[in-house]
Length: 151
Image 1 (tube, rainbow, N blue to C red):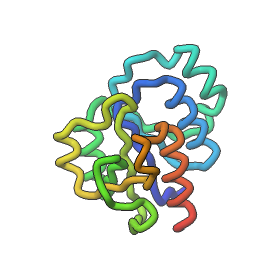
Image 2: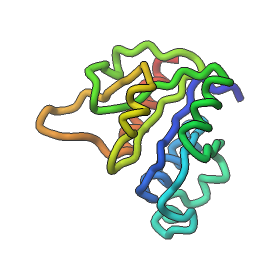
Image 3: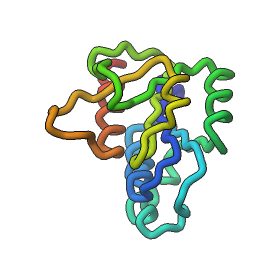
Image 4: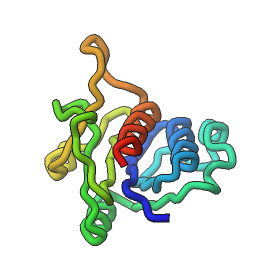
């Protein structure tokens, strides 16, 4: 199957979120890239409870670090789009292209400033000004649904 986009998680630090996102990737059929290290084991009961057997139906590409992922993206002509709260570029107004990889930072800290400065394209999910952010798994589902609707 040819994929028009992929999702990448930068060092996710909540096992249950990773499990839910793998399950979403399996159900909605998009590749999932994971930039390591992970601060938990894939045997963590919170991860296993959320992912169940869906991991067997998900295309997962592991990268040992940011540099490996960045080189992979360059080699494969992937445009990296950073999902962040630190931009005004509305998800719903953004023009996605084939082979985009949407990058999400870790739940507790986002991505380092160096990565923020490296990635040119950024999007945000517009939310109520009284709140800070959405859960990572929820954010991935919203972005994926928006992209799938565009294609």
